[in-house]
Length: 80
Image (cartoon, rainbow, N blue to C red; front, side, top):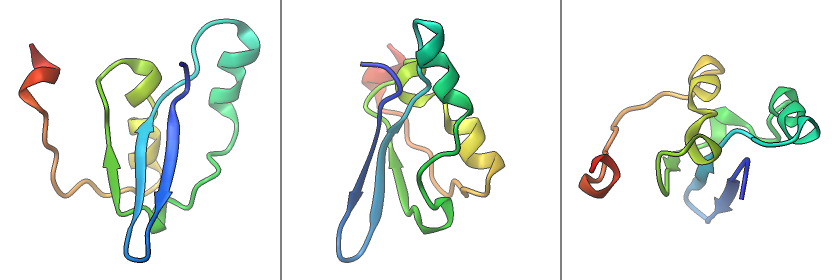
């Protein structure tokens, strides 16, 4: 899968699971320049399933657009 981004809304939180870049053929990569269909100000938590670009490469743009990281936790299995 490429460009993985899934928004889970609960009654209390908006959780973004992964925020990846699209990779592969040009038509996929061009999607990286489309506006993110997400209100970053209303996103409470970002959970990364793993640290490949297609799952976490959009993080710099989230931060640039106002997402505040208050706690960054890297699972030991992600850094091995």
